[in-house]
Image (cartoon, rainbow, N blue to C red):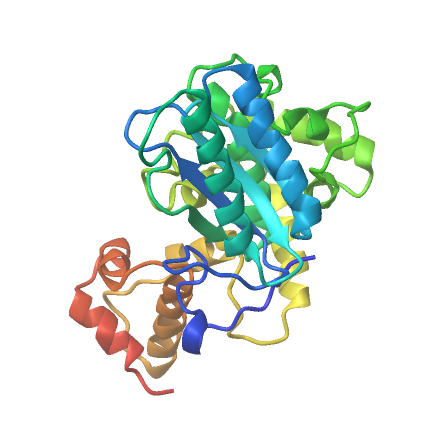
Length: 306
């Protein structure tokens, strides 16, 4: 369904939290876009419906698969997989057309959106599941609803209701991560939402790594599910330099001391961990802070010969 083996070499570094837009078909992206300043994106129900109409139209026009979405008053979240090399073109079409409609309707001028959309590529199943939960809990976090299923402008009902309507959003691939039986998966997904509510303290629009930290919280709450996902991904990988599942990377980070051992085996392991963090989009200064070492030490680790 999505690419599990992105190599850490060459031009695909930083692909996880994409500094530059990734346009490859078959990669699932968590796209966020927000209004400029404190302006609203949606004022009336018809505005939300207009955006949904553009997203639905784009699914067919650009051959896109949507997995989850949430329209908030001043920003949006979508999980999307392009089948062709046209994601940037599709996003440009959706947002420019919506802005034109909105500005005409409310007789306003200027940019509606606060810059280019942001993109995080979902390279592992734990992040993908976590991103969907985070997206559906967004209205609760913002105080717009008491529960995720109460908010009208998300795909949450497609995940939780047994008699959900036909939609251009397809929840089945993510539900299959939770359980093979769709009915059981819906029940377990509802449980995840209920138990996770209130734990996603950081804002993904403002703080890099917010969903990664939320993923680790979900791992603590549902260890058997996340370990199972990690094991499945591990069996699927044949190349040792493929990106690790987030929870497996965190386990290795906790087990390793970067300030002590200098054995050849330790140096090689340190280099592997640093490369993993680079591949997920962390800057060298962020890696140094995360590992409790200097930026120079990070460079030295990367320059270690095998």
